[in-house]
Length: 277
Image 1 (cartoon, rainbow, N blue to C red):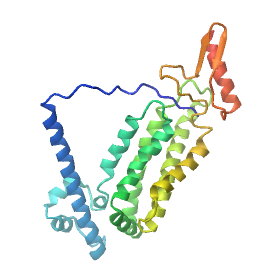
Image 2 (image 1 turned 60 degrees about the vertical axis):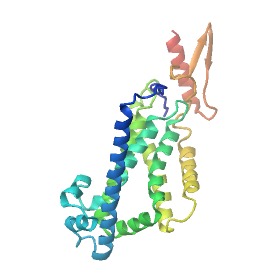
Image 3 (image 1 turned 90 degrees about the horizontal axis):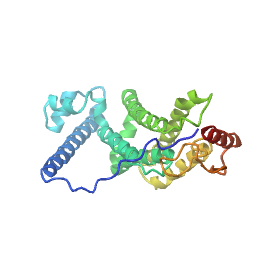
Image 4 (image 1 turned 180 degrees about the vertical axis):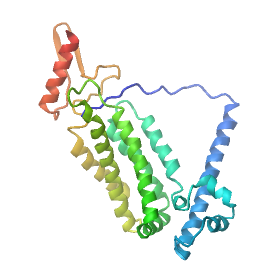
């Protein structure tokens, strides 16, 4: 299972934005902040009502009234009352995707995905009391648990697409059809490691060094997938061929990781020879 950077990262522009663009950008940031503020206020109202009245007995109208807004305002932010206790997932998904899009060229895609899902942990760790209360509530209400699972699935799909987009199409022959499976398994492993640490932290009342625990879990994932994912992958310029080989005269130079399986090393050499001929 080998990954490469399929294209170079867009260069950061040093051009200073024109003055007319600045107010528009500032206005967009304010609108996003106001949107998130309202979503969190609705979520806080929903959480309080769920805790006092119970989930089933609470209505959308009551949540909106408790937050001091109209029913239509509620539905501008959430499609249902179960969504109301997960106000940050949409924005967190955007931040996670931004991490993937801005990944440095030398970084292994699996490491990029690990950094991306840390945005989810930051979301929970930023408000530990609310996160713990929400965790307890989702354990008691199956509908909320299903909504939470649906949110997790969105991250898995994002990371699977990212990993699949970095496969080296020249690194596979007959097993090329396994790429979607391998990408999905790798993405699922990262998400599962994150969720394991998150649940343990929530059960502990939001106490403990969650970042250190998360890094430990990711180290296990990297160790497990290290040989298969990215085996033989190099950090040469992005324009270099995926075989990581270069020729000069009649000399063939091949670069491979020391822990790469022999059959993958041989495949790299064979591919380079084919390109040479």
